[in-house]
Image (cartoon, rainbow, N blue to C red; front, side, top):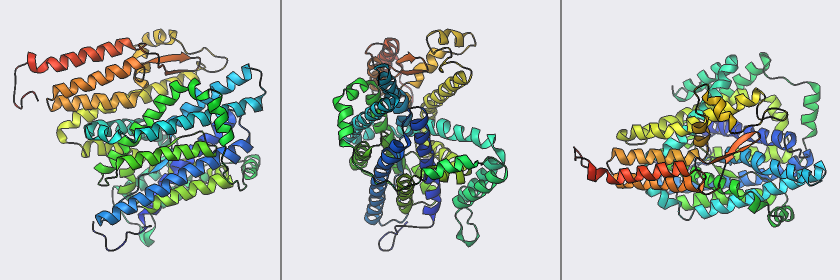
Length: 535
C-alpha cells in the first residue's frame, strides 16, 4: 500500500496491537515476580529494585529500535502497512534460567552454609551470568544467521513457530478460555468478529480494547477476578519509583565465580534456541510482507539481552512470535513504542501487581489465542502448497513437547517430582509404558524440539522436491546435534527431565539420523526415476 509522505508513528490499529502485546508482556512480568519471590526467595527490594527495572531497560531498548526499523522500512518502500517486529522477554529462557540455573545455584549456596538472603543473592548473580552468556551467543548468531535463512526451506522455519503457536499458545489459552467460559468464549467471539470478520465498531473503538474491557467487566461480575484487602495492600506497597542502575559488580561476581561455566549446558542451548527462534520470526515477518535485514535485527536482539544483564534482569529478551497477527489486526509502528512504554512504566513504578489485580489475565487471553491461530495459518498460507506435508511434519515436535510438559505437570499435581514426593527418574518410563505411553520418546522429543522441528520439516520439503542429497545433509545435521546432546539427550533431576550435553549420550538417535542420511543419499542410485526426476 503506497504511502504519501513520511509514515505515521501511530495509527488506530496500534491500539489493538498494544493491548495484545501489553497482555503478553504483563504475563511474563507476573511470572517473574511470582517465581523470583516464591521459588527463589528474592526479596521484594531485589525484584522491584533491580530485576524489573533491568527488564524495563531491555524491553524499551529493543522496542524503540524495532519501531525505528519499521519506520525506516516504511519510508524506503513507500508503504504504510509495515508492522514492527514484536519484542519482549523470552518465555522459554525465563523458566529455564529460574529452574535450571538460579534454583540450583540457590540450593548449592544453602548447602554451602549461606543464609537464605545470601543464597538468593548468589542465585541472582548466577542468573545475571547466564543472561550475559546468552547475550554473547545471540550477538554472535547475527553473523551467520542470514546464510542459514537463505538455505532453509520456508516450511522449516514457519512450521517450528506454528508448533509452538498451536500448543504452548493456542491450546494453553484455549484451555483457559473454556475453563472460564463466560469470559473466555465471549471475548474470543469479539476477537474473531473484529479481526476475522473485519468489523469496525462504532465511534472507532478498537476491537482489542472492547475485548479487554468486556473481559474485565465479566471477570469482576462473575467473581473470577477478586482480591481481599490484604492482597490489595500488598500490591500497593510495591508501588514506588525505582530508577534502573547498572549492576556491573554483581554481574562480574557471577562470571568470575564460575557460574558462566557451571551452567554452560543450559546457557548454550538456550542461546541457540533464542537465535533460531528470532530467525524464524524474521522469516515469518517477511512471509507477511515485511522484509527486515537479518543481521541488525538479531544483533539488537542480543544487545537487548546484554542490557538486561547489565541492569539487573536475569531474563533474555527476544523477537516475539506473532508479527503476522499484530499486522493483521492493523498494528504498525506505534504499538511497539506503546508496548515498550507500558512495560517500562509498570516496572519502574512497581505497579505490576496492582494492574494484574485490576485487569485479570483472563480479560485479554482471547487476543493471545488469536495470535496463535494466525501463526498456525501462516505456516500453511505462506509456504508453497506442495510443502503442506512438510509443515504438518514440522508441527509435531512442538505439539509433542507441549504434551510432555502437560504430562509432567499432571505428574507433579499427583505428587511426583515435588518436594516430599516420589522423584522423577528412569523408572517413570517403565511406569508410563504400562499405560502404552512411550516416555522415552516423549522426553527425547522435548529436548531441542525447535531444532528437531526445523530439521524434519526441511528434510521433508527437500524430499518432496526430490533433492535427496540436501535431505541427507539435513539428516546429518540432526545426527551431529543428537551426538552433541543439543537434541534428544535428556537427564533426570528429582523434579524434571532436562537437557544433557554429554557427547554421545544420545548415540542411538545420532546413529538413526546417520543411517537415514546414507539411505537418502543412495535414493537416486537405488530407485527408478519417475515424473519430475530425482533432483
